[in-house]
Image 1 (cartoon, rainbow, N blue to C red):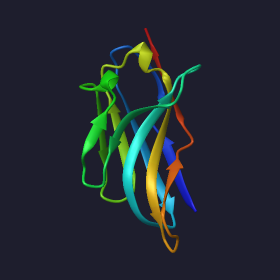
Image 2 (cartoon, rainbow, N blue to C red; image 1 turned 180 degrees about the vertical axis):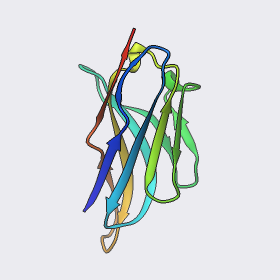
Image 3 (spheres, rainbow, N blue to C red; image 1 turned 90 degrees about the vertical axis):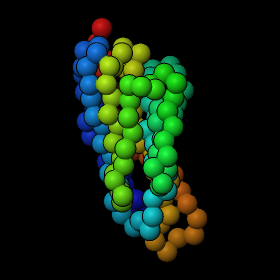
Length: 120
């Protein structure tokens, strides 16, 4: 099995910063793309940022210039969030596309979610 553990959420005032982390463990052969998604109350889950195994990144238009995604060579991804706005309030989830040891194919795994609340 594969487990993803997130950390770093919390309450911050508008204009502040937070850094989210997510690390994977378990029977992993390789990790391909990694990403961060968020879901606000009453809204669909949306992609915030993603990073490929080669380091290519893409961002939602709403966070470009404020958020930065990065990853380690092996099993962790980070999201540095600056200039936070109340609209960024949501539960943030990490997502890894994983090839498992001894298992054919690649599968998506999700973190447990971490709450980010930005007060005005």
